[in-house]
Length: 257
Image 1 (cartoon, one colour):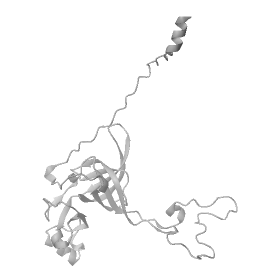
Image 2 (cartoon, rainbow, N blue to C red):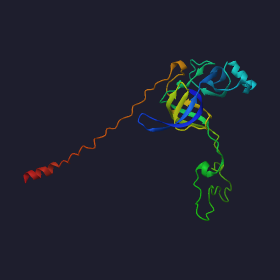
Image 3 (tube, helix red, strand yellow):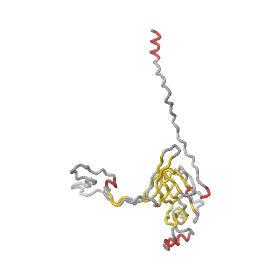
Image 4 (cartoon, rainbow, N blue to C red):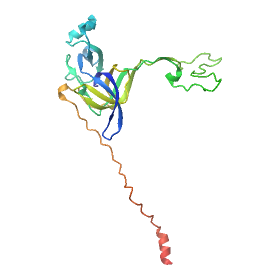
């Protein structure tokens, strides 16, 4: 599986070739430094450890500073692992860029959702709430939550008020609309989890995987052959409909008369 680390810049809109408006999220993707390559023989699984977004060395503790120094990589703020089946061409200290994805690819984006604090059931679970009439005394509350004499308890899994957001969230099957290799930017259709300037992990879509390998920055941007949209034939509006043909039996009766 191919994956990169990124930072959420914000949302905007673009227009496709047909002039349709497309909402997109702009991400600053890499460049990501390869910090460590984990192999099944030594670590029990195969993955590549990536680091993103530089930071000052004085802000590292001794363990972090030693880890970066061991693999000769400048200190970074965000570190994550991507499990991958193919580690061909990957070496510690090298960089991987946004050109590992192509326009038309489908990706899964993993991030931390925006925290909403303590919320009630109407906002947290989309409850309808009660009537707003005079004297109803039933507003944005869940209503009855337990049984009577038996079993005299609240069932497990009951949707109640509580902490909302600030959880690891994955959005699947988002299409890559634009890529700017010079500025390391990627525009993805739709919204991704997290606030502005929050870190996210971009992986190739689990449900739409294709055969690929890690690309070096020198290989440039891959061009996918996108399927052409089927054009529906539309008849001209000026064409008059043909008159309905009379049945053959009715025509024979007229001739006999």
